[in-house]
Every structure is written in structure tokens, then in C-alpha cells.
Length: 108
Image (cartoon, rainbow, N blue to C red; front, side):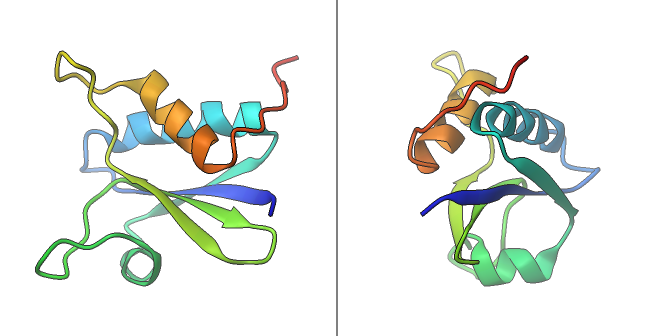
């Protein structure tokens, strides 16, 4: 099943949203797909995202929309490095791995 696009749900007030969007853009370039950013789309998160024990949702969250129209949750928040800092490379790898690891080089 192929990936149609990467969806990232962000919020302007959430400081790691920009980094999640950047990771999605980098992964999208490598996968040859588009990124759709949804700002504070609580309905989308409630339907497709991960929830905490109280039913609340965290931001940012990343999803893959597949060719058949289904949605696959990829990650909630940006992974941290062993030093406890946001890890952009790990985020990109997580997205690409969730897409099946099939990378097309669209850098040129």
C-alpha cells in the first residue's frame, strides 16, 4: 500500500510543532509525497491520533494517508536524542520507516 501524503497536526503555541513539520517536509521530499499541515485539528486527532488515559490528545502528531484512504498514526511528538534534545533525524527516519522504508531521491 503506497503513501498518498504525510499529515502533521500542529499548533502555533506548541514549540515542537515547527520541528515536526520540518521532519515531515524532509521525509516527504525523500518519499516523493506531499505534506498536509492541519492546525489544531482536534477532530482529526480524535479520530486518528493517540490519546492519553483521559482521552486527551497531544501535539504534534504525524500520520500517513495511504492510497486506499486509510490513515496510519506514525508518531506523537518529536523523538528525543540520548541527550534529551529533539532529534530531527530520528523523526525523519521514523516517518520513512512507517512508510515502508521505500525512499525515492527527489532532492534534485
